[in-house]
Structure formats: C-alpha cells, structure tokens
Length: 398
Image 1 (cartoon, rainbow, N blue to C red):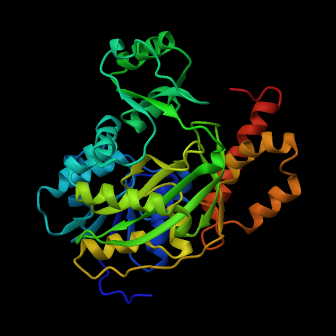
Image 2: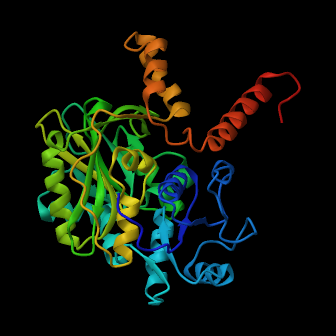
C-alpha cells in the first residue's frame, strides 16, 4: 500500500450508496473526508460521516453554491470527488475557475457531453466502429415512421439524460411494441423536455451483462481495470444489478478493446464504469453506456483491489498513480434488499433455493452492510422493516 504523502481532505459530493462507498474508500485509508450535507439518513449513520457544514440543507447544487460552501467550510484545500452526473458537471464548471486549493479529476465538459448524452455517444461509437446495439437518433415523431426489423428482440426509447429521465418517469427506458406506441411515448417525453434515442434491446440472459470499471490518469494511461458479470437484476430488463461476480479481464477482451478505443478518441481522464452486453447472435460485446463517475458498487472494486478512489486522489495532486494489474477474481457482491426481489422468479422456478441464496449472501460483499461500519445497514433495515409493519398493521396506514 502506498504511503500517504499528503493529507489533503476529500469532499464527497452527492449521497446514497455511491457516496457511502466513496466515503469508506477514503476513510479506510485514513484520509480526512467530508460529505456535502444534503445526504440521506443511511450515509449520515456512517462512523466516518463528517458534514462539510453543520447545516443539513444547502442551496441547490451549482458551481456558485459549491464555491460558497467551500468558503464557509474554512477548508484550506481539498480534493473534490463528484459522485453523480450532476455534480460532475458542476465540478467541471467550478474547476474552470483555476482555484489551486481545490483539485478534482473530472473530464472536460465537452468529453462529458460526448459520453453522457446518448445521442452523441451513439454517433461517437458509430464513427469509431465500436460494437453497439442498433440505434436510431430521434429528433421528432416523424423519425419513427416504423420500427426497424430485429431478430428475437424489441426496441425501447432510451433517454439521453438517464438521471433526469429516472427522476421524471421512475424507469430507465420505455419498451415500445409499435411505431404508434413509440410516438405516444415521445409526446410524454417531449412534455418533460427530455430527449431519447430508439435502441434495440439485445436479446439473451441478464447474465450476459458485463462491466469494465477502472481509472484513466492524466497521461491517458489506464492504471486499473476491474471486470464483473451480472448475476441477477431488478427490475427485469431495465433494472440495476443486484448480484454480481468479479471475473478475469481475459473473459472480456473485446470489451476492454472498446473501452481503450473510446477513451483514446475523447482524451478521457478519471473514474469510469462501462456496461456491455454480449450479443448471442454474433458473440460481440456491445457497449451500452459509460458512467463517467463513481458508481453504486465502487466499494466492491476497491475491496477487490482496484482502488480507483485513491488513484483519482493521487492523480489530482500530480502524484504517481500506482498501476494495478491483479485483483480478487470470483468474489461476489449482493445488494440484499433489491436482490430479494430479483430472486423471487428464480425461487419460484426452482433454479434457486432459499438456502443457496442465504449462503451466497453470507459470503458476498455488500454495498451498504459491512463489519467495520455497520450502522448504515442497521438504520436502513430498521426503516424498511418499520415501513412494512406500518403497512400491515391495522390503523397504522398513513
């Protein structure tokens, strides 16, 4: 483990599971870490939680609000770690002020636009000849006169801004069965002032989803790669991973090549998580999206040996970034609350049993529960159980 050459504090921006994983990654290294106060209850229960300011609610996130919060915090310097797309854009804008006291690692706004906007991303992949699902750019309803032909699959409307779409509609995309249905959905999307692309859903099991996570330093070198495969998902089709397994990089060689090609083209720097699905029709790993920030299961990568948080911390300060060539393979990570629902159809079909599920859970890493910081999981479990009891007990419904 690298000796700490600096004790520059870290400010974690965002909340939820991602921020909790980042907080733990830095705190376990003994690096002073503060959290933007607008955070959820579970995060505030962490033994390492220290708010940037005493008040628990600040102005809506913006570059000016961030500058004001940092000024009032009295921190002389810090590393700013953005944990959401919104905070990444804010930190990218803030970094243009060239204040040397507060360093960060975020791609340029042009790079963020190229990778986060799904329409621009599809055009980039097409130009680079990177395997991807069949995608059609949508400007108006006239662009969907009909649905393109597909083999054993279907089409869905995929948002150009995933986080805003999720907040507005509560889903990651709309499955459409006809051009008429697609045009109706487009009316709803247009009313919300959001954009989409029409994309083919790659057939095959959810276990064909693979992820390549890692870090690109200031020289353009990839200093760490971590591969994992999805084991279960919830909700089906457009949900999030609830159980996964770390796998050797050799199993996803084509995916790694695609990642390198994309990052070379956009001059990328920072933490990333790229999602692929292997298409059973041609065996290719099709690139679905790239998260340009920490992700839900970042603690899984860190605990398996690929500490992208420390890489970003060192890189931001101009220090040498240690290259990681090995990590723990065959490790599992399970998010119990969501995986409970993901396991239900498998339990009903007999392909999974309760004893096996419990055994997997006991051996796996978890994104919230851990022995050295137990209170966030206890607080979250208590809230879930209390809510369930209130719904079931007579006279307790609100």
